[in-house]
Image (cartoon, rainbow, N blue to C red; front, side):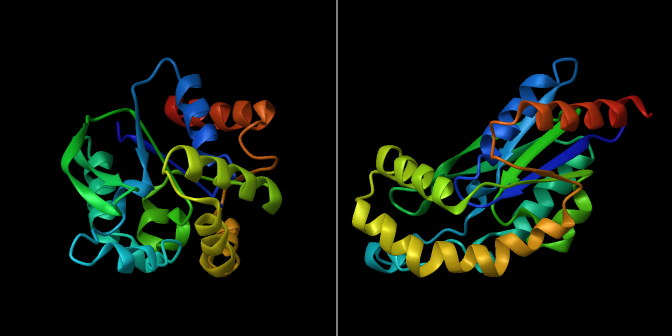
Length: 206
């Protein structure tokens, strides 16, 4: 049987990764592969660090769509892939890759996942995770300071200049492509149960 691809989109800090993990954990009877769209940023190793900091990371043009579509297509055929690894401290793609084996269910999350029609067509179930802007900002600040070692002023400057404008221009409009919209971010057990139920029905052919 063709693997089932579950796409989970939503703004930065919306809780989409939490939803993706919860969904993957809930599908216990099937093999599940998890992919983060953030791994598919284009490599900016050829420019200086100052120039990398100026890149608009929330614009669709910063992603390697060709590689992402190729990998999803191969996974949909039951093939394994070598997923890239992105270093968010240096803003470059690492030399190493991560083997993602063939799986019955593929879960992929990303802020701009539904921006490309080819990716949307490859997703059997499309989920958009919604959360208030202030909650998303707080979560982003915590994540970038702890996990990516960025100072607060840099995080806020980036949010005002690119993150929020790009969310309104590119992320929010893709909500209309979703099969399921999850309010209140990743902490919504009822929504998770509904998504898992939909996936299980699809897997059983009901």
